[in-house]
Amino acid sequence: MSSANCLFCTFVSRDIEPDVVGETEHSLAFRDVNAQAPTHVLVVPKRHVANAGELAEASAEELQDLVLLARSVAEDEGLVGDYRLVFNTGAGAGQSVFHAHLHLLGGRAMKWPPG
Ligand code: AMP
Image (cartoon, rainbow, N blue to C red; front, side):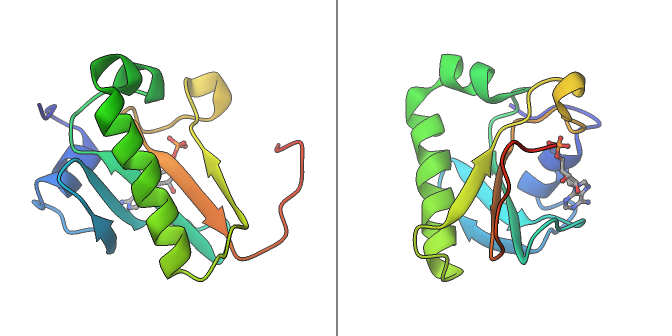
């Protein structure tokens, strides 16, 4: 399930310990090292897949688990329904780590469209 040379797989295995804010059987949530908002958390599937579409194809249950963990962390962070969830897919869309991850951003006003 894990992939060699994948940063987020080393977080899931805890060979490297991220700043964890939540966990379920299928998903891990930790703070982004380069936060773009007062709350910036990444929620990753424990299964190694490259992006959200691959996760949906592999397991609808695990995709649901990912989103529900993001919502739970948002509530823990006091975001009370005002937050942004983002999946970047592909380098052209800004993806830099090719292990699926859901960005949870909140705690400041959000603009649209994103850059
Ligand atoms: P993306 O650009 O959508 O692939 O998002 C990857 C995210 O991973 C970026 O927001 C980075 O700041 C974040 N990131 C990279 N390295 C680490 C790390 N060691 N710990 C936590 N977050 C990281």
